[in-house]
Image 1 (cartoon, rainbow, N blue to C red):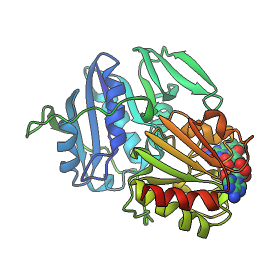
Image 2: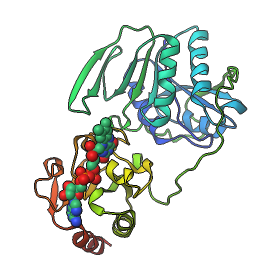
Image 3: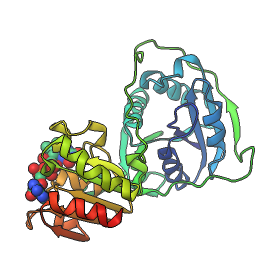
Image 4: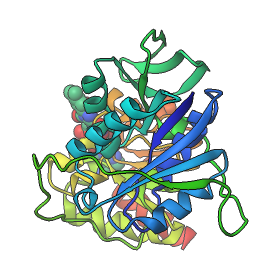
Length: 318
Ligand SMILES: Cc1cc2nc3c(=O)[nH]c(=O)nc-3n(C[C@H](O)[C@H](O)[C@H](O)COP(=O)(O)OP(=O)(O)OC[C@H]3O[C@@H](n4cnc5c(N)ncnc54)[C@H](O)[C@@H]3O)c2cc1C
């Protein structure tokens, strides 16, 4: 019996979300294996072998896994589960755009329910997950033979990296499944930024509709983020208005974050926004409306005009 974690990686290195997912897997009580499906992905596999708690890394290295299309990766996972003598009891992926693309396909192909966005492991078959945008926690028990789960990464500490060279876990090559040829990636427009990744940042400066325009967003928030070494985030209203691209969005339909410090500027604190950031360790809100709901979750609130206070704050911390 073992647990399979689907690694998130770019062939060269692991994404941080994989480390949190391994931590969740480690709580299930069986051996943890990590599946690295990619093309020329030996470096990512070697990194996975150094993650504490990982017993085995299984690598499917083939050209058609280069873009890790969900259809091909899901078919591979299902083939691995079917062929495995010991049997995988749990399949875990991070609750990221990538994980949420692959895991439901795996669950459907295995004809089991997906258990989404778990935040705690009670036992090998019982898990806690948020419902109603995080306003209630549901404890769910699954009787499925294979449990397919996505993991809310902010709810689990990142697994440590084992220091010794060569890695602690065995790395084992896996035969590739057939290329389904259902989808192909024509190109990727990736946001290139010197700033920390939103999902992994320790400090986030986030802007909302109160900023009024994309120009104001950049003019006011970038100096503050630069001074703090922070990532930039946004409310959905700011994204919908075109101030910033949608990968900046924090919230129920955006990214779930839990940094050490979250600074919400001109954000009202709608329930869907709070669902994505209310687990932040320290929340600072800047809003001109003292009744704004963001102040109910804020540790520090500043009632004032953001056009005055944000430049002052940037100067003070810069
Ligand atoms: C199904 C669904 C999913 C959603 N998912 C998300 C999500 O993932 N993330 C998300 O953020 N939203 C989400 N929303 C939208 C959410 O309901 C809100 O509409 C949105 O969060 C509001 O964004 P905002 O706070 O920037 O704008 P507003 O609610 O318009 O708030 C702007 C704030 O700026 C303040 N302000 C204005 N001018 C100034 C000034 N000069 N100085 C200081 N303060 C000022 C105002 O007082 C106000 O509080 C979702 C909605 C639905 C229905």
